[in-house]
Each structure stands twice: as structure tokens, then as C-alpha cells.
Image 1 (cartoon, rainbow, N blue to C red):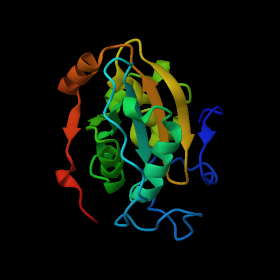
Image 2 (cartoon, rainbow, N blue to C red):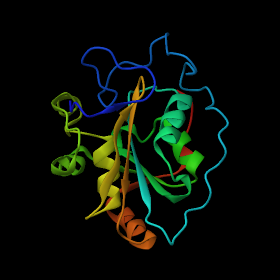
Image 3 (cartoon, rainbow, N blue to C red):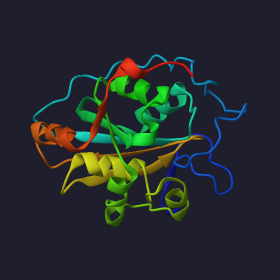
Image 4 (cartoon, rainbow, N blue to C red):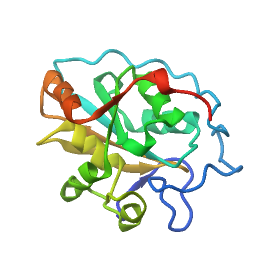
Length: 200
């Protein structure tokens, strides 16, 4: 795991990484974090519509299975300085059905796009915090950073490196393409609507 990863919320103990397939959140979720995946996230104001005159942002996310929506929304909000410029939420395809992922996409009113592990692994040379531990669990050296960069396209740059909460990670990439060009990347990614959101 890269030493430069930032921390948001309670640190993850030991060698555990929120991007790996660890058990669900513990009963001691930490201050301000809801327990259980069916609890609603806090009421944050909806992000404004993207401004097409500015460079679009892609919010990359990784999480343990069963991460509370409240925790992931709070982490996402903490790393995005320009919420109106978020164009996509991106993650690993095995996390597509997580209610927490759907909650973040709903909060920003943007599509959730996912990529297979081999596509995220191709982004390894651009990662700020590659992790062998994450690779052992997921088949790619990073989820949050890699997903953000994969969706943002060639020439994109990380403006927020991997940032952790207790059970999740987030990163933000800035695209140097127009919103329309970034949107066309959906052709090579999987798009998920909120219709799959349900409590487990």
C-alpha cells in the first residue's frame, strides 16, 4: 500500500484495506457512521448540475462489502471540492450492487460506471498509491484511483489521491476532455442505474 494515502475518518487497522473483499463493517463503526447497509445516509444538499464550461471530475470509490451508505457518502463529500463538476462515480464491477455506491451516485445525481479488474490494472502506472495487498484481493493495484482515472480518460490527472474512511476509499480525477467526450467513455464501461438498489 502506498504510504501517501490520506485518511478520512477512523483509520483501518493492520493490513486491511477497504478496497479488498473483507467482512462487513464491525459493530464499532466509529463516530457518526451508521451501522448496517440499509440505513439511509445523512441528508446532504444535492450537488448542482455539472458546469460544462469547466473540466469534469470523476469520483472513484472502493469499499468493503456492506459499507454503510452514510459512511461512503460522507467520504465522497469530504474529497470533492467542486461537487457541481462531478460527472461520474466509478468503481470496480464487483461493487456495482453495493447500496453505498448507489447512494453516492444518487447524491451527486450522476451515473455509476464500473470496470473489470483487468481494466483497472491497466491504470497502475498512473496510480499514486498502488497496493500489492489490494492486488491480491481484487486483481488490480488500486480501485478508487484506478476507477477515477479509467473513466476520466487519457491525460487525466489525480487531484485527490486515495483517501480512506473505516471501510472505504475515494479518489478524484480531473479530465482534460469535454463533458461529452468523458460521457462517451460509457461505451467501454458498465453503467448502473439506481434500479438495482435494495437492502441485503
